[in-house]
Length: 354
Image (cartoon, rainbow, N blue to C red; front, side):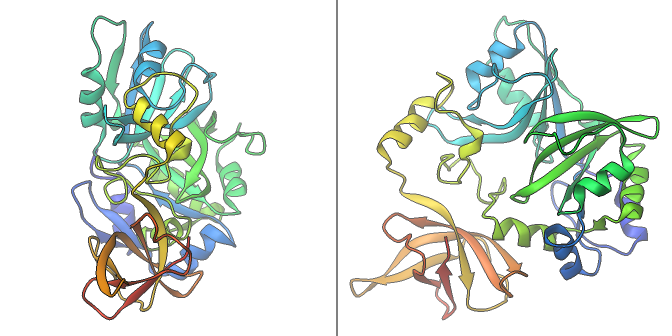
């Protein structure tokens, strides 16, 4: 599902939209600073995530199968619990990043928009005669996300039967929105504590309206990217590609060093034991507020010559610092906070923050 069922509501509300290969997305509802504030200090930011993918994995050998190939623990997950997880190449680089949830009789995998089909194919490659069934159920769910200090109150005002105070990270509960079962998961949104609410596509517009009426602030990419950049949270297709090791993208919560063998485990373990990362993701503060294109090189004078020492992957306006910020990969030995780089062949600079 690459078109959100919320699209007509966004259009009627006058939201600014942008289109991409994974469907239309809300840029802002018109008041980006207020949307950002709702996600940080006052209220909650409501985000459309209805085009995310969903895969179910069932069968008598589903647990053993997933535990054997995925980077994070599967066997230790009790029903109602989950984690962020990875499928890696044999060389330890990231192919897919997703959220895994244990149902008791099977698992749910929530993917980035447009990735369910390719992840299904990748998983199927490792299936032989196991009792495992994979199903793409993307069209059957339509999630939204909440982030901000007021999120638990706004959630509880709309969805009954959920104990937000007792919810552990990546745990989920089944609540009710009217007569419809709604899955509520506690997880990070743009690098901050948040919630994902999953309901049926036919009900998501009513859920969105109810959350807005309860006090949540609808928002879009401007506020989301500001939060993501400030919290150094890597995004699929920007910071996370199949050329990146998980430690480079700071995906430490998405893999295990103790669960035993999985695809790419030897490389991940070797990096942890011996180091050897040639680059890692950092946030840098920019000397101006104009957007910086992904792929812009980070250049620094070393020993009298200008050297290419990194690359920008994302830009955002930081409402917290009132400046432009970028995320980018910076080479080893040039990662001290305060290190200044030139942005490509321009006079603009970026200073490494962390």
